[in-house]
Structure formats: structure tokens, C-alpha cells
Image 1 (tube, each protein chain N blue to C red):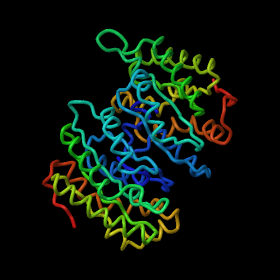
Image 2: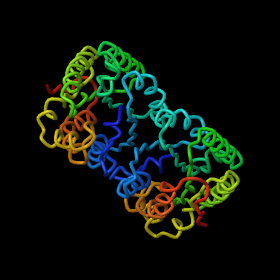
Image 3: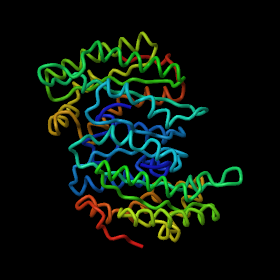
Length: 199
Length: 199
């Protein structure tokens, strides 16, 4: 659940990092029904407004239902001289999402927003990512910090720069997924807040 | 937009026929943002209730927005001695969906529901597919008749039988997609109701 990076925009293989996680889980024997609910241009406000209805359609009672979130890049985007969503608001949206997910008894995993080709925007994404991580810590929800390794990944930074400034092609998404895979497989095998957070 | 066959259940590559169509379109140079909105177990009633909200989230004003539908297998499923949705009701749901899509100015393409490993269920799916095709004819919406070629495809029938009776693995989905690709690429290049219907 998230934005265009979740949807895998720019990947000619139409998998993105999320699809690659699904492929890995199924390859590892997990009986996964995979739904990709990333939507272009959406901020945490857009996602907070739709995520629960869309998940409820897909996660009937009685199934082992999990939700992975990744958003924030659009929140931190500057438009008309200000960011689309202020960090405090982003944090509120995530906090409310995690509260509702807990009430629904859907274990959640949150992935940090990744860097892009715009240095100032990327600085704001980094700060927002720290704030989102604190929200997850308080909610006892695992948070995967992919920002720093991706900023130092020549593949990621080269591909987002060669693309539209935000979205890599297949190889960049592979790198993104590779950072998450060990946590993802562990989380699927044993849910809950006890997953060690990698900093 | 549709059911578990749209979602690509059973495909370890996590693409299904819909993902393969997206890959082909992007490979052909179409600047496609692909959203898969298939949901397990959903009938035409479930889809009629959610499709417009979910599409509205993803298809903002001003974009060349298209919607492909495929459903019906769950409608024709027998539960407790009767089908989940009667064919007349399925036809009404599709008719209403196509009317709303036209009002939204979203060009639509409808794919027939495919056969499965249960002979009686498959007979009902075939009859329902004919009815859905008539709805599309009346609405001047292109309808791709994949039922007959799939029933005679040894790959499709072998794979759905080897699977859960309904879902093939990757090769079956490739065959499904291959039947649609020529129409799909033509429809993307030139929308509207003039697409020749293949019977």
C-alpha cells in the first residue's frame, strides 16, 4: 500500500520492489495472495483515506492478513513553495493508519521512503523517514530503513537520475527489494513487533 | 479489474495475464501506469460495488484512462445448491458498470471468463460468457472471447487441473495473455468501440 514506487512505475517488468518481494515469498513456499495498492502521486493523506476500504475488500476475516506500507516521497514534494504534506501531518496519518490496522488485527510492516535525484527533496525525505520511524517505534511496528543504503547505491541513484528523477528501472527495484527480503521473509514466517529493526 | 484470475493467483512470477499485457504494452512503447485490481472470490456484485471508487483513485482527470474487466467465474460457482450470482444479475452488473464507465469517459475492454477443471461449472461459465458478450455488444464495448480457445488449450486445461482447479501457473497465464495481446495493443493504440470482436 503506497505510492508510485510501490506500484513499480518505471519497471518494464511490471513488478517493482513489491512484486519482487511477492515472488520471493512464493518461491520460499509462502501461500501468498499478493495485492499491489500503490497509486501515483498519492500522499499519506490520500493513502490514509483509502487504505482501509481497499484492504478490507482483499483481507476477509479468517485469513492471515498483512499490510506493508511505503509512502512519504510525495508528502515531501515541494509544490507552490511548500511541501504537499507537512511532516507532522504525515506522522499523524501514519499513526492513525497503524492504530486502525491494530484494531483490525492486521500485522503491518513499514518501509522508509527512498531517495530521489533531487537533493533538496531527498533531504526532506530523509528527515520525514526519521519521523515515520519514530511513529513506528512508538507503535511497536517494524520499520525497514532503506533510505541510507539506497542513497549510497550507485545503481539506485544512477537509475532514478536516468529515469524521471524518482523511479528506477528493474535493476533499481531489485536493489530496493534485496534490502527488504531478509526482514520480509522473517516477518512472514513470524509476525508481530519483535522483528529486529535494522538501522 | 476483476477476480483472482485477474490478480494472477497461482503464478509464481506474480504477473498473471494482466501483468503480461502490461509488460507487452510498455515494451511496445505505451507509457502505461498499470494497476491490477483483481480480488479473490469476488463476483460481479462485489466488483460492481467497488470498481468505480478504486478506479477513481487511480485515474485522475486529464489522463488517458482505460479499464479492462474480467469476471464471471465466481458468479457461476455453485454454493449451497445454487450459483453465487444468477446470470441475469451478472448481466445487470456488467451493464451498470459499462454505463458508469461511459459516463466517466473511461474506455473499457471486457475479457470473457475462462474455463476451469470442473466441467459443470465450466458449462455455466460458457453460458454466462455468451450473456456478457451480448451486454458488451449492446453497449458497443469490445469483448474478447477467450473461453473457446482456452478450453481447447492443452496447456490451460492441464495447468488449471494440476493447480487448484481454477488457476494455472505462469505458462497458462502466458497463453491467456497471448490470446488478448493483439486486441490489447490495437485498443491501446486506437480506443473506442470499433475494435473488431473476435468470435
